[in-house]
Image 1 (spheres, protein in one colour):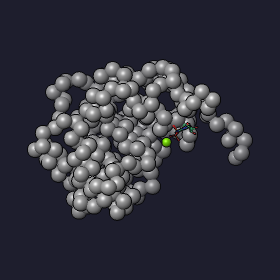
Image 2 (cartoon, protein in one colour):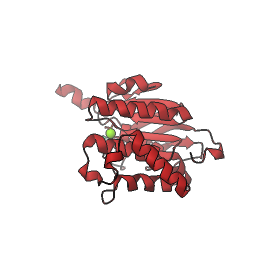
Image 3 (cartoon, rainbow, N blue to C red):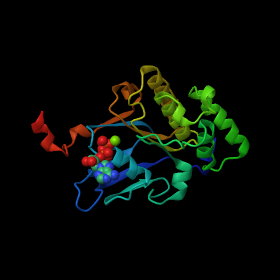
Image 4 (cartoon, rainbow, N blue to C red):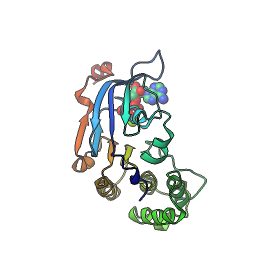
Length: 229
Ligand code: ADP
Ligand code: MG
């Protein structure tokens, strides 16, 4: 496995973190502070409460409007080492590269982390097998079922052994078997001392969580919807 030789213990925290997509729009995330523990944290909450926005901020894909994010490598925003080596991300809308095979998607993700070609080959074989993708490795993502694509996205996220893995609704719309495979994979993965954060309202994932943060316990942003029910 790669690069734990740098011996940095995983750290992810945020302080008074808030975000709005433009000066005129409402706040997508109200000030939020938390230190995420090693293990699995599940982030729950009604649609539109800011779960995906929080994940994008923690990933460094968005720059905080106010507040800050800290990792063991400093702030994630524009931190290329963090993106390449430390961060695994599964997007809500899967983003496997469409014009190449499942196997190549995994190889490319792992090559960013700077491993040797022998290790690249070993890791690719390992993760294809772990997620039951051997039979589909030469196919383009668009020819796979939803569950197969989701498993491929998770393999691509975890193949570089990221110290921080952020997954946005990884089991939405999936059957119980696919969900169990994903739960088991994440539970095993996290034993290496990583921080895994899952945005999901899927109760089937609750048993693998070490911590559950429920945004429904915070003030709803869309108060006006309450009068419509
Ligand atoms: P969740 O993932 O919990 O459903 P999001 O983080 O996607 O919530 O959205 C939080 C708020 O930010 C919502 O009000 C949503 O409409 C708004 N929002 C999300 N993405 C964008 C965007 N790209 N541009 C403008 N507003 C956005
Ligand atoms: Mg979302």
